[in-house]
Length: 92
Image (cartoon, rainbow, N blue to C red; front, side, top):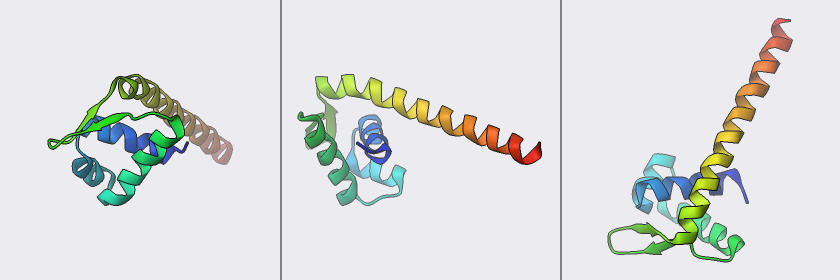
C-alpha cells in the first residue's frame, strides 16, 4: 500500500467524484481509478459504490477513511519533524 494510494483514496472520499479528485491531485482519471482499484484489491473489499452521481463510501470505506487520514497526518508530522532536525543540523 502506498502513500499515493492513500492520498488518492482520501481525495475521492472527500470529493465523492473521481473527476474532481483527479483535478485536486493534478492527475487524470485513469491513473486515479487504478489507484482506487489497486487499493480495493489489496484490502480485499470494495470501498466505494460507483453511482451516476459519483462515488459513495461503503461501510468499509468509512472505516478506512478514518485510518487513512490518521496515517497521512502521521506521515506529515514525520516529514516536518525530520526536516526540522535536518535544518538544526545544518544551522548547528
